[in-house]
Length: 119
Image (cartoon, rainbow, N blue to C red; front, side, top):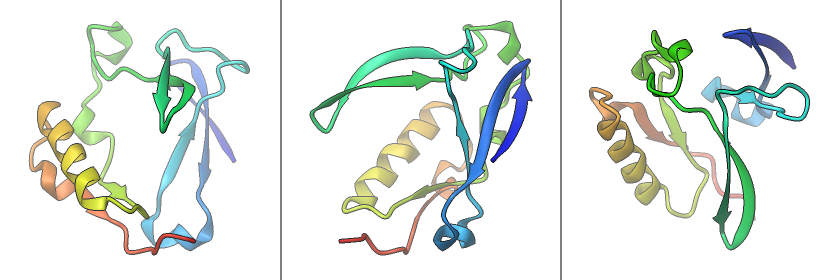
């Protein structure tokens, strides 16, 4: 675990399981009970029939001046889909969302993992 600050807020970053090492993926963890950020939006959404609390980080300057210099297209190299039973459908949804957000060449940024689904 590596702790870092962003805009004065503490975030924890960790690596995924070594089986996903070739993807060189990083995840950012947010613990609102440990250190709350006013930038985060907390909502309740139902996913797979289960109501869950979701914390969303807005990527829009209209939310806060802190985000004024944020370039969404530079936040990531690619989005990796999978393992999943519906990777093509998910890929299409992410490509559409990136296009709507103004990311150039959105199709090039969304790839599907070749790691098989565990049973």
